[in-house]
Image (cartoon, rainbow, N blue to C red; front, side, top):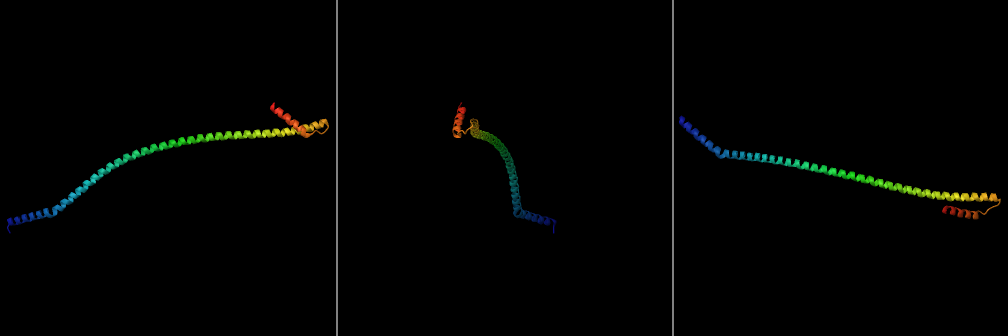
Length: 159
């Protein structure tokens, strides 16, 4: 065969091979490359969007934390105020209860004092009757004497 014919056949085969490649192989490769480029672009866009979302989440988290700290401080302040109120209220209740107990004790002392005076008066009356009967040498009517002593004690208390 001739060199020119070989070159011509090789050129034709090359052209056919080029045409087959451009017609059947190249379009799917281009489609796959374009799809891959789209996926990469979408991934980059999603990454940018994720970074923006992360930045927004960090800023909103810091705002939420700051608000939580402020609210916690407010709750602590209210709790302290309430505890002080409870202490003051308990102190007032204790003082009132103490004063009531002192008043009850004073009433009890006054009652016991009155009972003791009455008992003492009766004993003094009986001693006076016994002493008077010994002095006079005869029996003195205890009932009459007790009435006289009661009248005398009432006059002493009034006067």
